Amino acid sequence: MSRAPISEARVGVVVIGRNEGERLKACLRSIPPGSDVVYVDSGSSDGSVAFAEGMGFQTVALDTSKGFTAARARNAGLERLTTSKLDFVQMVDGDCELDLGWIDAALAAFVDEPDLAVVFGRRRERFPDRSIYNRLCDEEWDVPVGDARSCGGDALFRLAPLLKAGGYNGDIIAGEEPDLCLRLRQAGWRIRRIGVEMTRHDAAMTHFSQYWRRSKRSGHAFAELHQRHSAEPRWRAQVSSITLWGGVLPGLIVLLALAALLRPAFGWGASLLLLVYPLQVARIGWRKYRSGEPFGFAFASAFFLMLGKLPQLSGVLLYRRTRAAAKAPTIIEYKGSGGA
Image 1: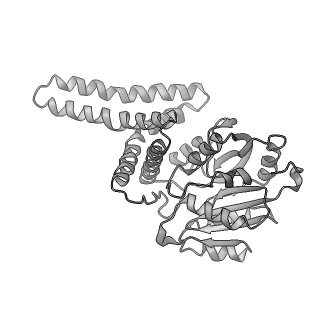
Image 2 (image 1 turned 30 degrees about the vertical axis):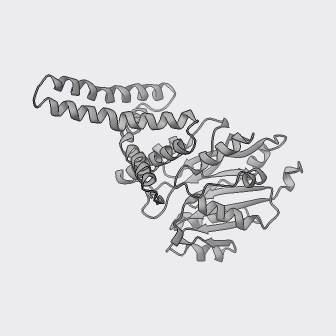
């Protein structure tokens, strides 16, 4: 991009969704007037496409016979937008609302920083007190301000490097943003989180089963990212942690408990290993409390962090089984019909 004044920069918006209903309506209404907007729909049956078209936005309906992913949807939106002469593109999920001043604040962050490719801000949960799971999501979104390794689904991209990187990898069902951001960083670009409100997200996560599926999806993402980018130590560490806490230690506990039926002394070994989990929860919870989180939430967050290793392991195993069978993965939804 030329270093024209930011006020002259042209920004497009890609919104993706699948049966988001009222959340999508709120999202589309939050987009600044006059923006070049494309709504990409992944097989909705709730009138989402008709609503977007009624607002005058371009729409793209993905061919569901090929399966669909958030990455495919974003790429389809990019393809439609590249017919316009744009400098930046804002990606936003259909269950999020853009903050009124976000795009101007994000554009300002690009001033005099030609190597900055991605800017993102604070994504918040709209209803963090509705469930512990929503509140956990809100904590997850609050990453440190400054240079970052990757962004989430909502972010403002400099269009030229995004296109040069080939956009998103459409085969990835989860974790497509870290994959893209790694490729951007390898090409010499930077990603930054700024201390500005960006979007309000509605996880709508009120049941344990939803938390389980979302955690399973994250395990699948870590496994795939590790497979694709084995040199990256953070994904190797994530998969190793999931395997240890979600598989190896529980397996040893079960084996020792069964052995105790023949020789009771093995029961002590099972008990000692079982104690490792509450000790780990206490260690993580105390660290979170010391960093400023409320006492109760600090330890609840630590508990669910450890509990989540079990569904994450199921996601890791699912990825490995699917890959071994040379099958195309299918999306893992936690809202029933959509959600990110």
